[in-house]
Length: 200
Image (cartoon, rainbow, N blue to C red; front, side):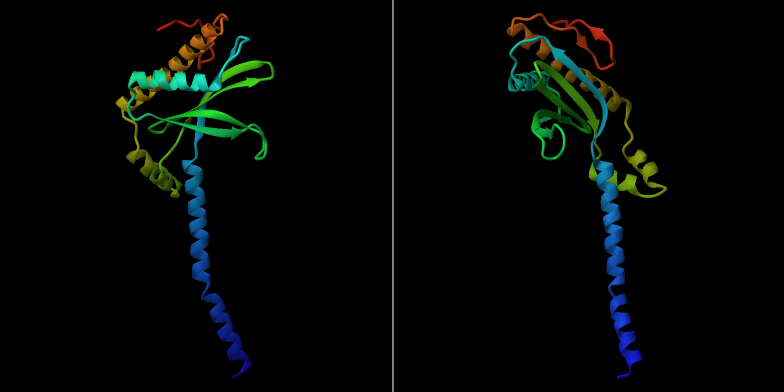
């Protein structure tokens, strides 16, 4: 067999892998776009330093859960998770995650130096199909906006839910500081203003 023929056959055999390679590259790009689109985005945060005293993170989390369950919020779920304090191998802190629809609250109650604080981070998530639509070039965001448009009721429910979580957190702070025998702090709300705690 001539050398040219052997070389041609070898070239054709190597090209047969090209469609599969291109398909793999496209799938990796799409998957990367979907993962970026579905990851949680923090849109608001809040934190409060507590007066000196002995506090329990677990007690604070359990109390917040109990208060929200008493309120009868539909579709709400609770879970525990940990976040690293620094890099991947640093110590981790325990958080309480509160999830409803596309809104996520990650609440932290923990010591820092000789202090103790409570904070929450509110984020939004997208489901997988919303992520897929958003990742489509040119038309994706428009289609996603049509399918996942927020109604007035959804916006009202979201606002009330945010206020409810914040109120349950502040009431919990009032309760644990009272038990600790210290004066309840002025609560910094999520608009940056300060207001005294008012018992429900």
